[in-house]
Every structure is written in structure tokens, then in C-alpha cells.
Amino acid sequence: MAPMLNLSKIRNSRRPTKSAVNFVPVPLFMTEQLKKDLELKTKENNRLKTKNDVLRKELEWSKMEIKRVECPLLSLPNELIGHIWSFLSIKDRMRARLCKRLDNLEMEYEYYVPRLIIHERMTEDPVLYNKYITDHKQYFVLLKEKVYPINFFKRIVQNARIGYFALNIYGREAFHWELCNLIKECDIDELKCHFKCYISDAKNISDVIVDSYLYGLMNACSKLELDDPAGITAEGLHKVYTCIMERSCKLHSINFGYTSIVLLKDFLSLVGIRFEGGKLFSARDIEAYQFTEIIECDEEFADEEDDVIIIHKHVFDRNFEMKFGQDEEDRPTQGWLSLKWHKTEEDLEKAKSTEGFVRLDLTDQ
Image 1 (tube, rainbow, N blue to C red):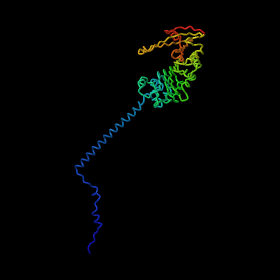
Image 2: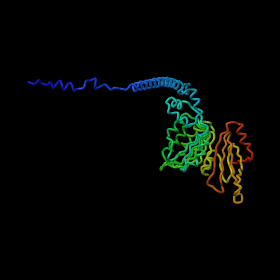
Image 3: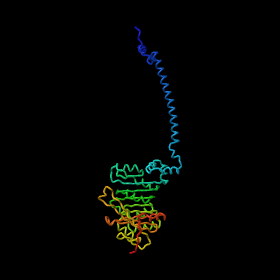
Image 4: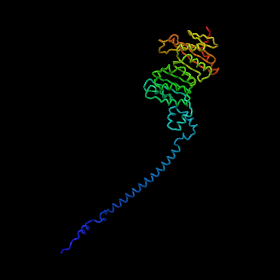
């Protein structure tokens, strides 16, 4: 009987061992190269680690330095910051609102603005006023595409004293009405208002510039110029006259420019003066002068136009001066009027001794 073969042993003998599978013979020269590569990578890692440590230390030092000198201004006391703020333009002050503390300081400390102009342009050409804006930093232009929010001007009014404030508006929106009313809350030395506008469809300038509005301006400014008395009455002017005479208001000078001759005569009648045919009549103890102003025409039109002659009447009631007149030839329905209180006797005498003044004799007839 032939011997039997053990097939399982034959199969197992053909299966490769574990060591035979994982072992990959590597030449000697490649082993040396791998060692060199490993050493280079190790050195590079160490170099980068050292560099990262240096950069980390520099970053930490920079953070500490930034924190130490982050904003030297904020390390100062509020009083000193408020004083520094007084030298900034309005626009720069408004930018400071991004910082909460500076915003609070901007609202708390008063400052002086020598000159502020708010002008609404009727043209949309951005080139026309660029030079003017450059020359006057406190110059705000109202455009259809750029209208400052009313809160912007409210902040200015709350803690700013303004030397010269000129307001020229032409718009019809509620914003303009708010801006007109906001002026009454200002603290201004000299105010010039030019309201050639309709505030809304229901209100024109005669509805805005009325007696009550003028009363509000009496304590907002020292000098006032209104190009149009609009809806102001003779009684309203007389009240202003009385308040200035009694020194019960801040206002001491007001100029209306051209006004209706009816308003002028009615006002003068209330203070005891009659103005007829270019002559003055009064039974009061006042002084009156006449001054002839000659405005020469341009040389270019010298052959076509004559010099303009304007006759002013100056009436002095104690320290109070009234300057007025009438354009009898060209515009007989119009006159002009300005009122001024002279603070000192020296100012009063200087005004009376103006070169060209001619003393007038007054009668009650």
C-alpha cells in the first residue's frame, strides 16, 4: 500500500513567512542618504521652532507695547481732553463719537467755533463750491444726495458757542423747519440768515419768520441779520426795540436789509417818529442825522450808468441808534432798517461823529 501525502503540510510549506513579507532589502548607500535627510529635516524643524519662539516673544512684547501706548489721549484727565477737543473742527469732533468715552466728553465740554456756514446749493455741480469748502473748514453743504442728519446739528448746538454763523437754505423739507427752530437754541455772536425757501407746501417764509421766531432769536445771538423780515409786524419790531433798550435780551444789533416801507413807517410811528417825504418829524428828545452814501458805478459801465446815491437817516435815542431810509425813485415801496445799541458812551460819540453826518432839526409838525 502506497504511503499517503500530507497535503496540509505541503500548503503550509508554500505560504511565505511574516518576516519574508515585511523585509525589504535596502542598499547601504541609500541608508546613509536617508540618515542625512533626516538630520537636515531635524535641523530645519529646530530652526523653525527657534524662530517661532522668537516671533512669539516679539509678538507678546508688541502687544504689551501697544497696550501701553494704545491711545495716549485716553490716559489724560477729562478736563485736558475737553480742552484739546476745543481746537478740533466740528467734523473731527463728530468722528470722535466712535469712541464711547470721547463721545461723552464731546457732549460734556463746551467749545468755541469761530465761523460756521451751512449753505444749501441749488446746483448739483460739485465743482462750484470746492474751493470755498477748502478755504472754510467749518462749511457744510446741503445737497439732495447729502443732507446731514438733524441730530448732527443738535449736537453742535448743545455745547458750542459760535462766533459767526451764516445759514442759507432753499429747501422745502421738514428738515429745514427743524433747522430754523434749532437756531433759537444756539449761542451765537453774529447770525446771518438767508431764507429764500418754502419750508413745506403749506408754509412759506412768511409763516416762519414771524414775531415769535424773532423773539426766540433775541437771546440766541448778539448781532442778527435777516435779509427779509417776512411775517414780522411793526408791533413785533417795537417789542424788540423795547427789549434792546431795556437790555433785557442778548441781542444788541439787528439788520433787516430791505423791508417794506409800510412796516418801516408803522414801526417808527410806534416809537414816536413820523417819516414822510424823506423828512422826519418827532416831539421826542432824540437826535437825528442824515448821511449821503455814494456808490460809484464800475468803470466798465461808467458811460451807461450813473453813481448810486443813497440817503440814510440816523436817529439816536440815548444809546440806541436806528438807521433807515427809503428808495423813493427806483423802489418807493421798499425801505431799509437796522437797530443798534451802543454799549459805551465812547462808541456812541464815535457813531455820532461819523464823517459826513449832517444834523437834522426835528419838529412835531
